[in-house]
Length: 237
Image 1 (tube, rainbow, N blue to C red):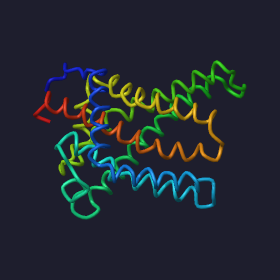
Image 2: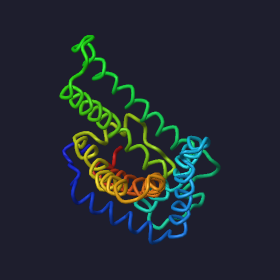
Image 3: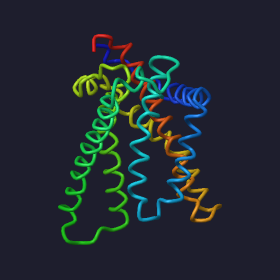
Image 4: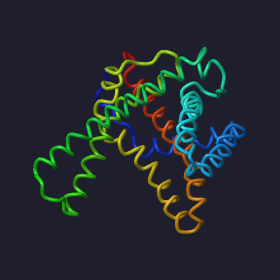
């Protein structure tokens, strides 16, 4: 195992944006459909059905994630059995993996929260301590989720690696696996902040929902690029 291999972060980010652009160009109708669905969900997100629609839209984004993984790892792909698998098994597995990663990251966030609570006692947290807590929580969540997330791209190949393999595969590259998705999210967050200043409040949710599949494609492209490099460096895994 080549544990000394280091993912070139900037080059990987560049490749991720190139792959994301390629996915959009090759699948214009699919990405347009997600954009239209995002507009509808954004318009209704504040309604009584908003929470349910948001959940449905998030789950419906799994085929887009698998399509992106497939494009990077297998070449030109389509929303067919080769990408989505036979039946719903591959998509359900991807959803369960995502939920498990989220649960593990969420539970790990309790560690710094309890630690700060024990140190501060019953005294209210100051602004400085609140910022430290937020930083610790975000850092712990990102670190815990980073290496297990390498299991997600392997789903599209029909033979997902184990959690232990994903953890070993990311050895020595935790920082890159944390910074990649973080740097991808920064321009999206910036756009959302600008939108909040320029458009009516009723349209802010619409823009956020349109940007969601963009972030999914970019993040999945980065995970696939990282996974491909690490598998080539560690073919025995």
